[in-house]
Amino acid sequence: MIALNRGSRVSWKLLRDDLATSWPVLPPPEDVRKQENTLSFDFGLMSIAMGMMPGPIPGDNWATPERQTWIWPDAVQQLQSHRGHLIVTAIGEGTVLERSKLLTMVTASLLRTVGKPAGVLWGENGLLNSPEMFCALAENMLPGEVPFPLWLSVFLGKNTDGTTIGFTQGMEAFDLMDFVTENATDSPDDLSERFYGLADYLVEHGPVIEDGHTLGEEAGERIEVRYCQSPFGHERPVMRLDYSPEKGRSRYGSWR
Image (cartoon, rainbow, N blue to C red; front, side, top):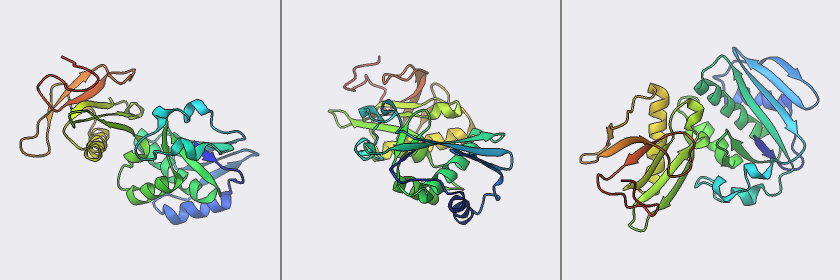
């Protein structure tokens, strides 16, 4: 969903021109269908549909502290004054990855052309991004890379002993497990990059990292993977990254 400030509107001409200029990899949109508050069009076997909603996005979707992530820490404050929103979806015969990339391109073009966008609320996980950040990352990463910073919520914190805790929300969209850790020796920035890298690898190769496997990018680095229930409230099992074979040191308590 795109949160809109007063004075925003969808212009098909501006949107069509931006899609052609910014995303030459896309074919020209076909079978354009316009009604009073809706717009839809096709890209081959995939379709985009959008509808303009007259009121703000319901507050329980964005105005709670757990919605804030490091990528846009003042999101709640910035969205307080928005007055409408645009629901945009991608459907059709493409894969989840293909539909997500298409939706990201169209969303970036909408942000550049609606006039006064306030922010983006992405997916069931409700990741909030500013218009500027969303467009910049989309332009820098698409179409060749997978823009997980726009799709995957990452929550980070520090333990009293200096280790890092963190978890993701959003991998369920790809039918994969989210990641959690309570004792990472990575810095928060490095841990977020590790999460994005794992997400990219698993979306490309499938669920090939199994319970009990070990990870490590550097000599001497050993991270054990365990499938488990989440200490952070995920409804489905998660993939826990255990940086230490010893008893857990998190402020959330021991897990062995």
